[in-house]
Amino acid sequence: MKKSAVLFLSASFSLLLLALAAPAGAGQGVRLDPSRTELGGFGSSSSGGNFRFQSGYLHALSKQQFKSISNPTGSSMASDSDVTPPAVAVSTPADSNKGIARKLVLADEGGTLADSGKNAVTIPPLAMSVSTEISVTRIELPDPIAEELKESGREELNIKAVSPQLEFGPEGTQFDRPVTITIGYDPLLLGSRSESDLKITYWNPISMKWELLASSVDAANKTVSAQVIHFSLYQVHAVQMLAAAAAAVIYDDRFNLGEVYSFPNPARGKDPTLHLECGLADSIEIRIHDIARELVHASRMSGAEWRVVNGKYAYEYLWNVSGIASGVYIYTIRAKKTGSPDINVRKKLAVVK
Image (cartoon, rainbow, N blue to C red):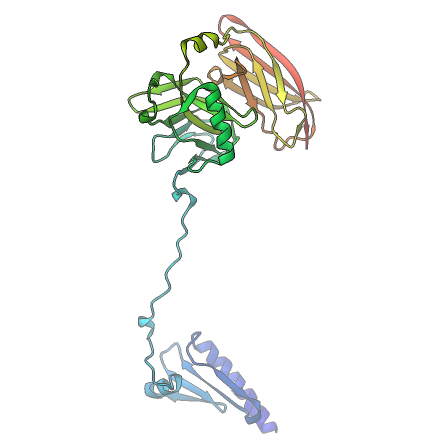
């Protein structure tokens, strides 16, 4: 009994040495039979020799003996050089998806992102507080329900889409300085409408209406450009009005104070929008303080960022309140226009989280 135990321990220790010397998967396996105090196994050493371990002894084997043990059926065995390694999996980045272009833009440098077509966005230096990966996504399959609302908005304004809908992202991104977006249009979709009447329009998801932006047309390159201060969904439309309708729709661009408000107010779990009607201005300055009069946010808007809301020129600013605590805030808006006194207005809004 003692002899068997000693023999078994000797075999176990020798097998450990064998396992350390042999590469993984070198042999067919190991058999342990305590009743017979016998341990069997075989493999190849790192020095190239073949061996077999049995009954506590290590036996050297010829190549033929090793083959007969490791392959008792006589079937052909592949050498290391015959084994084809598995193919390496390659992941496809989201950028390869049709209609999507992405680029990391450094905050202090700015940059331009252009897709494979004629669509692009140019961000000036310091327009963003942090470096951000921006994107331009062509909406291939618009949501049917949302598209019905958009088409209704087109009919209301008598405008015709002549470009794809583009989502500039990250959606809702606000800029400290105006950025320029450029969208290519299809001249074949113009019909009887003129290229001089093309406008980039913004789909306002709150009012469910298209809003026309001050735009410049490059007829040679078939593109339209506009300055914006936030990312959202934009599209080029051809604007056409009958003479009577055009005469009836004359927007008052005089630099006068109109309605000023924020919505929603209180802002419960949503970013509030500041709305100012003042005709056409050269620039807009926005400063927001907490109730202790500490400045918590400041921004500027270009005078070119006007939009027509309910037949009036207006400026709207979406305040990103992420990181802002619940409470009452005081916002001050100053509109400037050369040759006219500044327009200053102060209002309150509440943030509830």
